[in-house]
Length: 142
Image 1 (tube, rainbow, N blue to C red):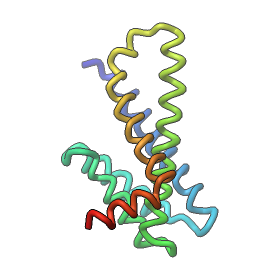
Image 2 (cartoon, one colour):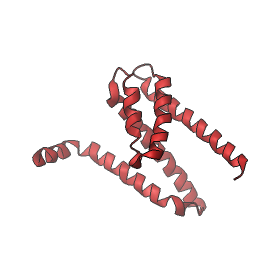
Image 3 (cartoon, one colour):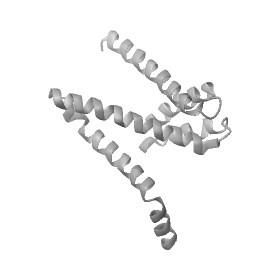
Image 4 (tube, rainbow, N blue to C red):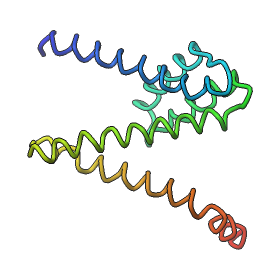
């Protein structure tokens, strides 16, 4: 393995880590002071947990840990993370479309991830639009 690529990967991942923390804190600071140390710990441990447990269940830790330090609680923390994921999705979509226009062969490798992300976003949007109807159906089932 080339050491230069390893150093570049570590550098870019570290920069991305700080950008994610700053972006989430910007969402929080609209309402209250963001605990950046808690956000940093939560994001770091979430990355580790997502490597160990399936289905990105480490994100639950990213919701609960900073939620202890927020006045608005874990639900507010979850909302900022969902918005963060939606913004990530739109960013990836723009990059995907640019690569599609350029005809890059990288597209073949990321199609599956794009489709899964698209399904997740559509489910979230569907839940937001049909929230009352879904609750009625769930109540009837229960």
